[in-house]
Length: 103
Image 1 (cartoon, rainbow, N blue to C red):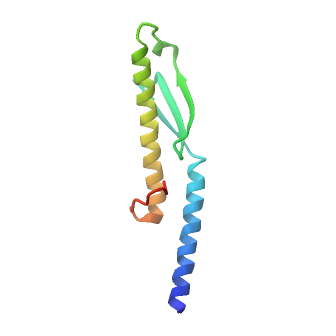
Image 2: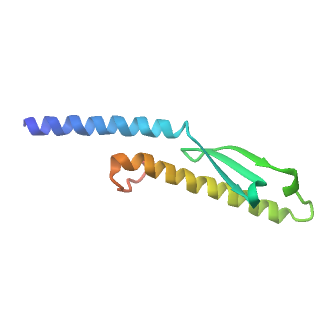
């Protein structure tokens, strides 16, 4: 019975640490870019887009599709980097296990 209580305390402590780490992810900002930096996107660790910056040289009224592709690439770059940050930060607690809905 004593081992069970000790194990439950460890699980509770791990849950608290994971919740704190998830909260901290929301405060981190990650930048993705495309076109050599003409489009940059900033997301937080929860993969919410915080800002999009488009330099004037990226805007060509004759080639809107290129701008759309640049934005899409920059967003995906930022999200992929956010995933890497989340996996690194949360991996300390999950030992590399993918837990659905956690991050």
